[in-house]
Length: 145
Figure 1 (spheres, rainbow, N blue to C red):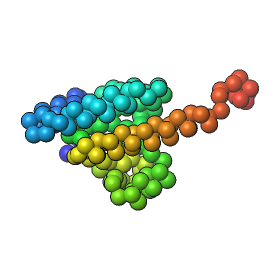
Figure 2 (figure 1 turned 45 degrees about the vertical axis):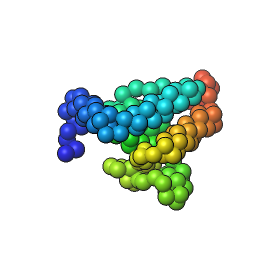
Figure 3 (figure 1 turned 30 degrees about the vertical axis):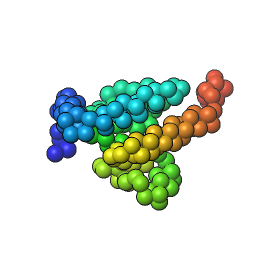
């Protein structure tokens, strides 16, 4: 079924169907997803857009920190060290496709999960902030002829 992601717009159609199903079965989840999006957009330098495989994607300074599918599945990118720390807490799972990467998956099922999802995204945001803060600025002297 992996080939389906290569069909133009199909992931977005599928995600829209997920959203419609959630609307019928658990409409409060849509409110929670909107709340997560609104909070993340308040963080400096963060933008939201469509994710290539459906849902919305959160980027900070041009780097994806995570994405949220309309069924409440949150995927977030961490360093492998951070991923291992979070896995030990027992609330997240390895990514549903890329298990051996820094990606994690977390299903939002309750109000508490909604709050934890915000924390997970904030950790990823802070990770990217720290990475950009420690990066040396580009100067003409830093490039060898």
